[in-house]
Amino acid sequence: MASPLRLTARASQVDAAWSAVVDIFERAEHDLTRFDGHSPLSQLNAVAGDGWRSVPPMLAAALAASHRAYRASGGIFDPRIIGAAEHAGEHAGVALPASPVQLRAEECWLRLDIRRGIAAVDAPVDLGGIGKGLALRWAARAARRLGVDDFLIEAGGDIVAAGAPPAGGSWEVAIEQPGSKDPAAIVALPDCAIATSSTAVRSWIGPDGRPAHHLIDPRTGRPAMAGSQSVTVAAPDPAWAEVRSKIGFIRGIEAIARGPAWWITSDGALGMTAAAGQLTQWQRRAPFC
Image (cartoon, rainbow, N blue to C red; front, side):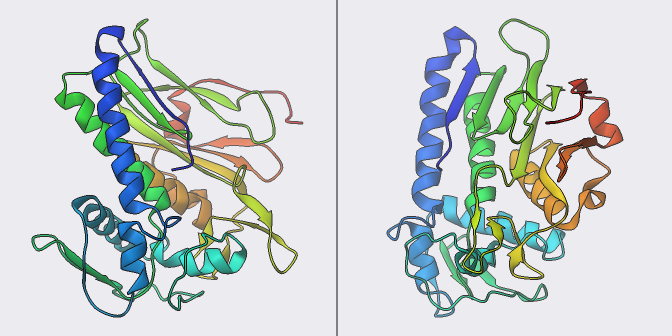
């Protein structure tokens, strides 16, 4: 998933847990990537709008989760942004049928029969963000099934944690300050997950000469311009942490103000919700450079 993968656990448990975590991520990458024309997702996208296709269980689960997030967010989280992302300049190098640049939130774009293992989509979809969150969810479940109760799994800055670190105390996680080696804040993470939506890595100059990034606002078909460089959200589940961080980035932090959330504004200032303040152990006070 173009992300470093790390596991922290007790030495006596780490080997078995690591094997299970890697297996989950390799299978999720194989099934859910849009950057491989032979992946099950790309094969489904290739026949978008043209009937049913067999899908493996991981892809079926990811499609179902994406549709739930789409409905719960009123269409703000919309995996059909693949066409807009390609139009903005993020090319996967995989041929796709016609994909709308602007989307209508009321559309029912997915038909899914999990029992028969078949699905149909009306437009190509991108499962990258929620796919990583789901892989973290599945990896955490696999670790617990092996009897590993204390662990932290990180995939490209998205994290799921359980129990306590080997040295005791709480898991400590840094909130990244874009453009700086120093963190914006350090938080104590209980049994939960944390995910960040940021323009720090995947940004470029678009075909129209304007700055662009991969976080597309489905209401406009353009990269979102809500005023933040990054939005980080803590939630019980890593897939929903990923979804909520994107909603906060696209709609603005007021959309997720009830839970723990941190954000870096366009001028480099750190903000946080009241719930996030309770988890924050340290925050950078000096003006950002």
